[in-house]
Image 1 (spheres, protein in one colour):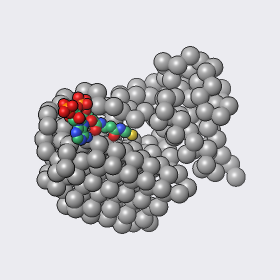
Image 2: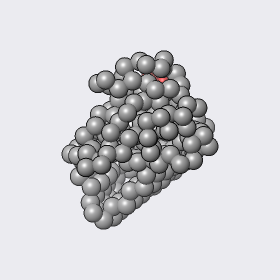
Image 3: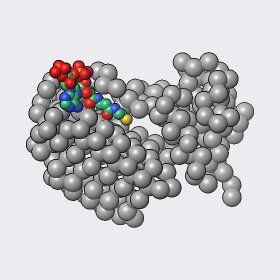
Length: 223
Ligand SMILES: CC(C)(COP(=O)(O)OP(=O)(O)OC[C@H]1O[C@@H](n2cnc3c(N)ncnc32)[C@H](O)[C@@H]1OP(=O)(O)O)[C@@H](O)C(=O)NCCC(=O)NCCS
């Protein structure tokens, strides 16, 4: 089988998980990591090393016949900035999905590009996942959900049916979201929250039941 040569952008914890997922996808060969903050040549996963920074991509793509890859950065805002940078530096770079073989995805779900669907994740009937989202380990996105681009759900998040998660919003580890709830853009749902009411945009909610605990701006750190 012909395998496409690809890279993972971001070589920290999440990037390594993404490389691990891709190493189990028969259509791809990961040739290394791109990371501007880790020294070139550093070994990060198996025998894969950092090949250079984003600015080196055009040269690296030519040298290694790299067709594309994925941004493996957990922070939703930083991930979007890096995607924009790559689109400007290397317009032909193809953003792929990293989907673990154990993930269960309905044939009726729609999934964009640049997404990470980790081990044991479930994406149910008619769900819509935008671009550059993360559905992390054992998260369960139920029927008719909608995740806007650059949204993320952490490990073991569970949503009921017809939940909407806005762009750049992070639903943190183990949170549960009741069916039919809308979560706005650029918000954070904290670890272990039980969300029973709609979540406004640009806000921080946590607790059982979840309540609004603060406000935030685009790019505020949350990890
Ligand atoms: C919601 C969150 C972003 C808040 O972070 P923060 O603003 O830095 O909050 P702090 O740590 O300063 O905590 C403030 C208070 O709220 C409480 N608190 C924070 N997060 C909470 C949560 N999820 N549930 C209940 N209480 C929480 C703290 O215990 C603290 O209480 P105290 O003042 O009585 O000690 C963070 O707690 C969180 O859930 N992060 C997500 C982590 C995650 O999912 N990681 C995995 C990614 S793969």
